[in-house]
Image 1 (cartoon, rainbow, N blue to C red):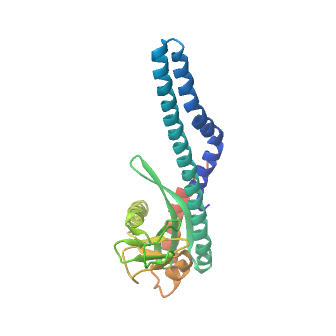
Image 2: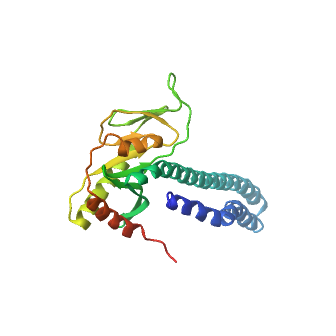
Image 3: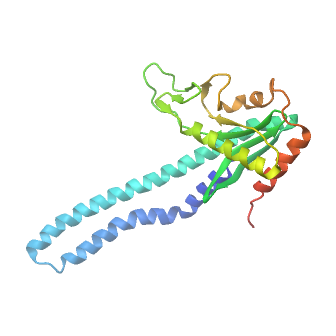
Length: 252
């Protein structure tokens, strides 16, 4: 289903939560206990010096443990946010199925030893679309900027707090990988359109660009409205069969 990889990461964190909490709590205490044990074997003037060092080391270890624990919680929150965003995109892709489109989620891929997933792939009369989802929290906006708008000029994303190209490069790279793989496995050349979906954001972008950047609610129109037929029914079936085989990765 959509967001399967993100959901697995959330579940893994929940399973390891007790261990993570104990590790963050016990490591500073263990450091302090070891140093206090050493204190008992030292002379008085060394003992007082090491006592101060022990307290300082404990404070540093405790601060690092808390920081690490908070970072793990943040990672868990980011994974769940990513899962939620992918589910939102999947819901907006659902109506396209009634118009002859095949939709695949969390498509597993590999390049050498690197493994990754394409969030969504849509195959239909209008062609093949590789759709990446980037779910971002709203943050402080620069003066004169709305905190809900993203501007795309064809080269970069202009968020309320600054510019970014990361999501665009990811969408292009994944679409290129999918295009090469489909061409290799089917023997038929095919073009793949890279799309970047931004749940919760209003997007202003040019009508035509290398990457189509959209709010998920615009996806049905992007796929179906005013698009000429690019793929025949036979081609749709051919590419879909390859994707179905690749997505059958459930382990029992």
